[in-house]
Amino acid sequence: MHRSAIPGAVRDLLAGGTVIPAHPLALDTNRRFDRRRQRALTRYYIDAGSGGLAVGVHTTQFEIRDVGLYEPVLTAAMEDARGWTDRPLVMIAGLCGGTEQAVREARLAVSLGYHAGLLSLAALRGATPEAVLAHCRRVAEEIPLVGFYLQPAVGGLPLDAEFWAGFCGIDNVVAIKAAPFNRYRTLDVVRGLVAAGAEDRITLYTGNDDHIVLDLLTPFVAMRDGQPVTVRFRGGLLGHWSVWTQKAVELLARLQAAAGGAAVPAELLALDARVTDCNAAFFDVAHDFHGCIAGCHEVLRRQGLLEGIWCLNPQEGLSPGQAALIDRVCREHADLADDTFVAANRERWLS
Image (tube, rainbow, N blue to C red; front, side, top):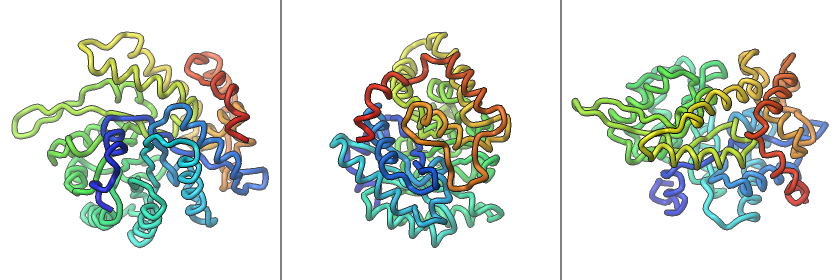
């Protein structure tokens, strides 16, 4: 599937920038797939105003592949999205593993109607940059790609500007999720994009949970042929936006409006630290992100969307003190939460 086959309304939505939550996995007390609550989450994200969904990604738990849930989970999200709304949605499938596995997953995603694949490169640790690029080119023959700079703390590879220039030179790349949680490495993505002259084809999405607001407000400048080129992050593809999603949609609209103006209000700049403070609790920064998935689950559990915080890996859960940190940010940043919205619609989504 070539990017030209993506429906025009979806292509415009992706290029303009939108909220794309990384879809969690709903499990029951026996750690089995909870189809009803999975459907409720999809409905929640759609009604909250999300412009798309990313499914089978890190937040969905990579272990779904080990227990035969990759295809059922991708199928469920597509069926539930189509059954709940007819508005355009950018549907992105997570792809991982070696080349053979990633190609197989890409073909499945295309067959289910997904528009692009978010390509994790964690399985290629130790490979040369040339080998990694060859892998990307092969997968791009199957599906439009969203590049993924995953932070090394959870398995990502260090990738320099030269790599990103090569990656952006692949014709079937439509976006990049920059999530190295590192300003220097984020600039490498920008420099590579500009060096490839691909800024009009490839849209930048933030995955930097420690700088969500500033990524979306900052004009990034890189030099090409002696001239400055300015690019911007247009939207977010985030595990963080799998919670409090309605407020994330409102926030992105405010940030996009401000980024187009002559000056950025100080209160928006101040939001960066507040959102990052919430993320520190949700993503368990104090314990090197060990409880990042369980932390998002906990917020959804408190809202009644999930029954519990269970993960496929029994070793994954909240870290010591993480629940107390979530208590604090929920109390101190209550205006960033969408509890009222969820409470008013929860039973309808669960029906």
